[in-house]
Length: 382
Image (tube, rainbow, N blue to C red; front, top):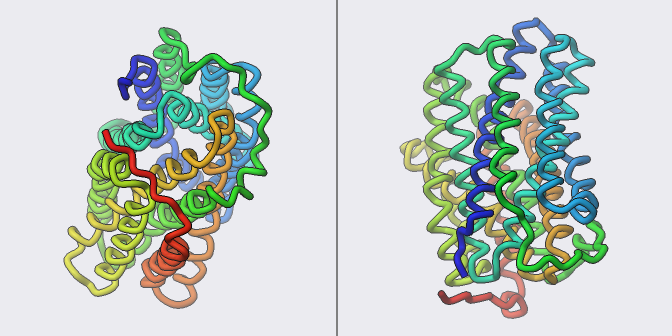
């Protein structure tokens, strides 16, 4: 079976355009609010409203896919996100932007659930690792390109919003030329999200997504602060963040390939161990370039492997519900991780960023090693 079918390629093309808009707005919205002299707590509340929208969008998308299918759900999600983007231009105010970022968060989460679920249902146990690696590479490439666009183009509100909304609407076009169905056109049976959290055989995957959310949320949100306190300039911070994200892009394909060939459990153990090593290197004041490269390569590839582990433990008709549960787990981790880590950094030391990441990684590594003989390691030979 061909891994990268025409529907998969067109789906990834649409996601790339959406990711460009998401990355640009996630960077510029806090800056636009700061330019309006809004207090820091209000800027934080607007950011939190986006993630709250992510949680709601994640929960509601499964039923939408069941009744309308992947294509129509994708169109609706893109339109919701476009409305959330366009609304920012109507009025610059705290309550207004709180609502519009909440709407945008719903649309973004719906897009992620639709794309990830479509990829999982289009693939098999033998190639899901590669499909998810391609998905993450697409997402991270879009993120890096979005940062480049921010640095190379005017950043005024009304200069950015029109082409951002245009990108979102253009992302609908690729899906007009294909139909996402999965392996068959069978109607998905009614499967709730919440029982997915209680599946014992998939628990390592769910926990892995929570840990991944804590790690990536902390790195995205607090690494710039850590570097700033080290006296590094804004342009320098941009360089180091780009290096870290780029290392995640480089690692996606080989890690996905290894997970397909040698099993997710073995690869997860190695990844988590390498994250701990990367944190140790950052704490020991080793050369920052290789330390960040190692940390980014392992940390940014953890989510797709954990997701693939959990999804291969459920029945085909449960894939969408499981995908919702995993994305919900990741979102919860990305909300809780930076919050507690920031409190620790403020109370004690900036080094707590890496101590926190290493600590949760150690806990997850113990889960992966505990009763290893009772966790069958899938081996999917090409």
